[in-house]
Image (cartoon, rainbow, N blue to C red; front, side):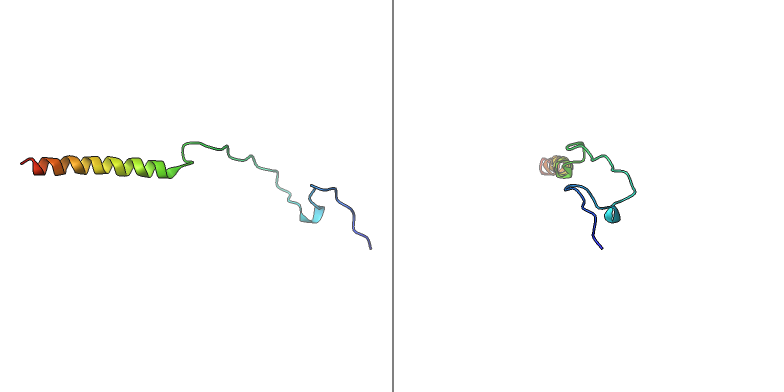
Length: 59
């Protein structure tokens, strides 16, 4: 018994998926770098804490 030849780049029928291909998410976007948002939140928290520390020392 011989196996049928499949052209390069094609998926053999036995290994294929019946689902259609999905569109890939575009690069970038709002949530691409969550570390930036973490940094902004921490910087804001430190600024608020610094304000209160400065007020305490000023008394």
